[in-house]
Image 1 (cartoon, rainbow, N blue to C red):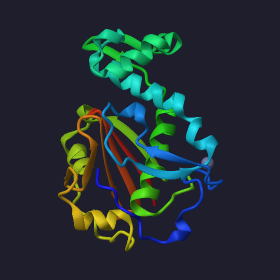
Image 2 (tube, rainbow, N blue to C red):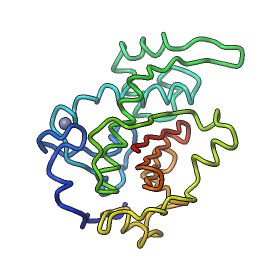
Image 3 (cartoon, protein in one colour):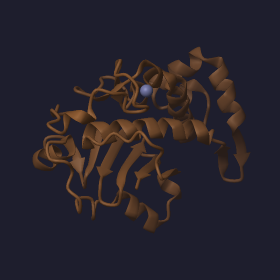
Length: 230
Ligand SMILES: [Zn+2]
């Protein structure tokens, strides 16, 4: 990915983008468990305190593994598409058991009961990093809305609205922010309709400030996530 310097307001830097605590570490977004090697160069990153940066790694691992099992319709590590996730599950029998328990057989195939709280926490962490890095607008407070849904379960109308970029720049991003610069350099990265693909098939996201601050993320071209701060 092209590395863009942020020329936005410096007062929005220098603290943990999740809790406002000390800037002790760099939180890469997306976390590497959501990507495969070779990793994209110049991954986005935001300042974070140690606790926020490391505190959700098990949740992130859980979500990455859950998604692979759902997509493969199977829990057996050798059946999964991402080799990395197969390795994680082979080494982590308690997570494997947990995912096995989440699976039941429905009439049209396996049904998975996601641990929604854990999924939500990971999505919020990702969205906060994007808000801080992309828009230079750290959002320390709770979002007004956080939702996620498989793309395949969205109605046509929901999907169109989710993918759309129609009103994304009614409010222009902060001058100097990376989002503003991307408006000017679109074409150097995989950048379609306002979506930025960090890694094809694994992770893409979209930020806008049209109706509040909205961060949309698609994981594995399967799960659509949306976080809104009014
Ligand atoms: Zn923190």
